[in-house]
Image 1 (tube, helix red, strand yellow):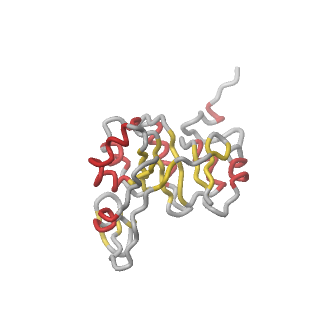
Image 2 (cartoon, rainbow, N blue to C red):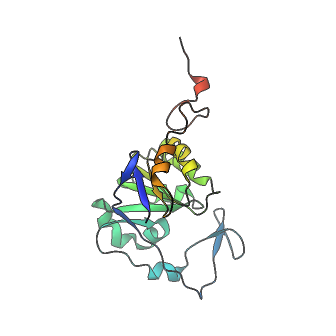
Image 3 (cartoon, rainbow, N blue to C red):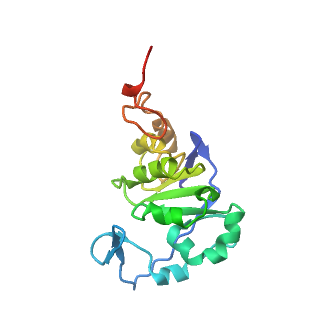
Length: 199
């Protein structure tokens, strides 16, 4: 079972992730960058069949992929106002699409960045941009294939919660949030050690 780390401790997870169904008879659609669609390379995107067939739980707090939100927002806007809707952004999706989809990005109580594989580092950039350029103040969650060694740097990039995959040690992951006391690089949370002045 996946475990949620929030506030440097294991916490209950109130949010259900909505996932489109997978159809074996559908050709894989992939996206590279912002506009190019082709079959063999790039990132998987949801087909219209998947979007249409996605089941939305009738109640409770749900994390909805941005594509599904854009397709079904007329049916979900009241739940957004009630604080029951969060958005999942895939790392290949333009962050501008997320920001443009809401009058106020802080109307979202939570944004989750889905990391498809460990080697994908775009989540660090997305977290940093959400906190610094777009002023997102609420919960920013990392989900997907995240490893304990990344958590310290995810925290510095603005993330404050982490859904640890089943089979991984959450206690070790919590410890990794404090792997270093004096970061050398600049980030969302602090200036690098070499820029500090001692008088």
